[in-house]
Length: 87
Image 1: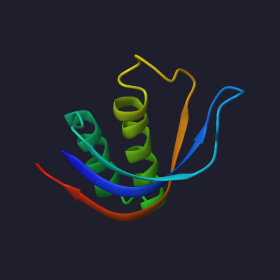
Image 2 (image 1 turned 90 degrees about the vertical axis):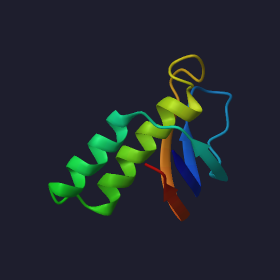
Image 3 (image 1 turned 60 degrees about the vertical axis):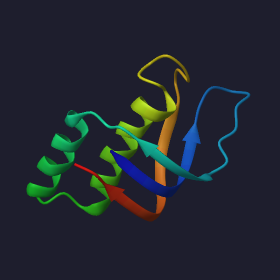
Image 4 (image 1 turned 30 degrees about the horizontal axis):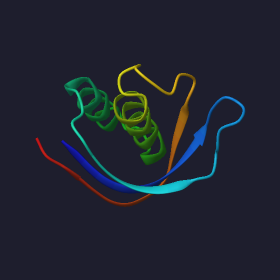
């Protein structure tokens, strides 16, 4: 389970907003996201790279609801205020 307060930037199809927004999110994340994060960390990935992996996971599982909405949405993690991970 991921708990995070962060500012997210968005890109999407025309007619939608791309204004950055701060959100507080609690989201159950699949093990694959955690595996990618741990593998990146163990390989010496930068914080920016790890944040990109986290943003991709949130995009797919929170914002796009596993492909059920927001087709074509891009999500960028701009600033993390705080984060907590439950295993």
